[in-house]
Image (cartoon, rainbow, N blue to C red; front, top):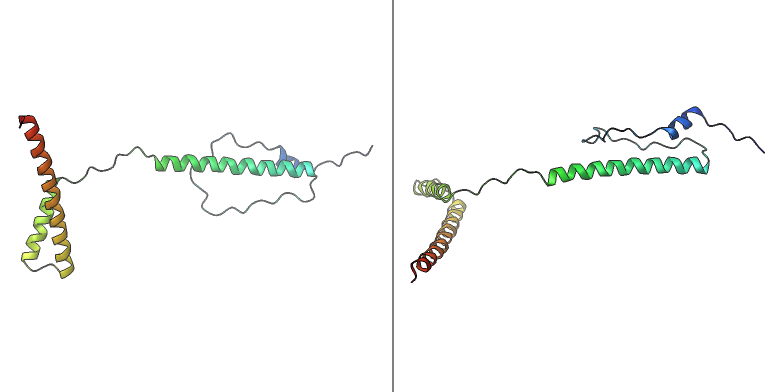
Length: 140
């Protein structure tokens, strides 16, 4: 029987290396890493082991990316509250004052007219809803 050829020390160290027990970094590296090439002239078994190692590294990175994206997407911060009716009304009244002073362009004038119309419609809908609730409570 022929004696198997001993592995080079760098190839042996490469294949016997265990992945780090630390968690993967939370941020991607600053520069793009070029994929490493397998050492030349490996047997089919060693080549398969190298490919398996690369797949493990890729999957570890994918898992870390999924965790990072999940953290970003599902942040526990609450959205800001909607602006109050008083603040909307105050902003509209300020724009009307600017219109009366002649400080608005034609486009701004059109936009203000639309915003005032929408605001009045919203207030009317709310008033109708509250009137119906009042009527219901009073039994009428």
